[in-house]
Amino acid sequence: MTTALNPEYRRSEHGSAARPNTARLRISEIFYSLQGESRTIGFPTVFIRLSGCPLRCVYCDTPYAFGGGAWMSLPEISDGVARHRPHYVTVTGGEPLAQRPTLALLTQLCDAGYEVSLETSGALDIAGVDRRVSVVMDIKTPGSAEETRNMYANLAHLDAKDQIKFVICDRADYEWSRARLEEFGLAGRCEVLFSPAYGTVVPADLADWILADHLPVRMQLQLHKLLWGNTPGR
Figure 1 (cartoon, rainbow, N blue to C red):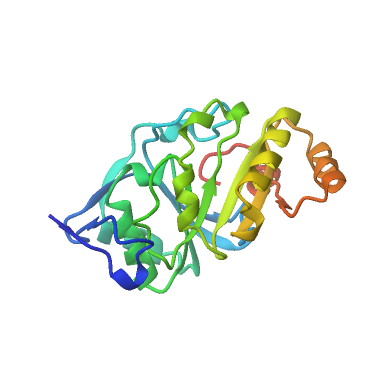
Figure 2 (figure 1 turned 180 degrees about the vertical axis):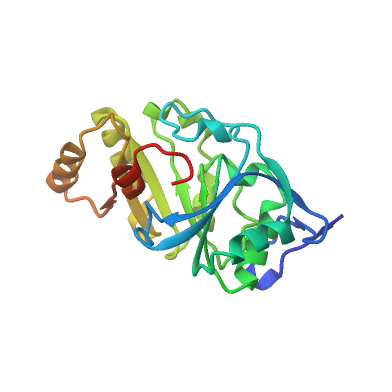
């Protein structure tokens, strides 16, 4: 059985979410760490990592979340979050929107008073995501090997509180991303992040390219990897 999200908080009139008292999600891990990316970088944050992803980006740093995990009810997930007494909660993956009850989870977290963000690949429809959620959405570059999965219709559902992320694998990716920035007028829609693929692009090179072209984007490094490398759950 499903129930529609509160229309006041829907990104569009489409989409629904499973009832919180019956819905279950396959969870890879719930952990407390510093946010390593996006607008809230550096803030203590609870991360809910969902299992499963339909994409296989070449730079993926969480392949362990492709499968496995444990089934948890929405109340159980809420209890796991609450014990850390957070202000910020990030729902990530895998690809969180691959599991339909994620919509209900996002609304439940917002109702609990958390500042909630969703990290999504941009390959699945975000129309049903609660409007109170800050969406951090990838646009996949050619270097990711998943460029064809970009769902550009999602751009219509983003606003100033959301963010678009390009993970740059090489100079060709940078030029491609710069072209999409201009083509879709992305900087006028929301904040845009350019991030060097970890261990692939020299961060100083990406910084120089951005400066040379006077791009209206924020360059970001992954703080958690600077601190802890690729350690899972950090």
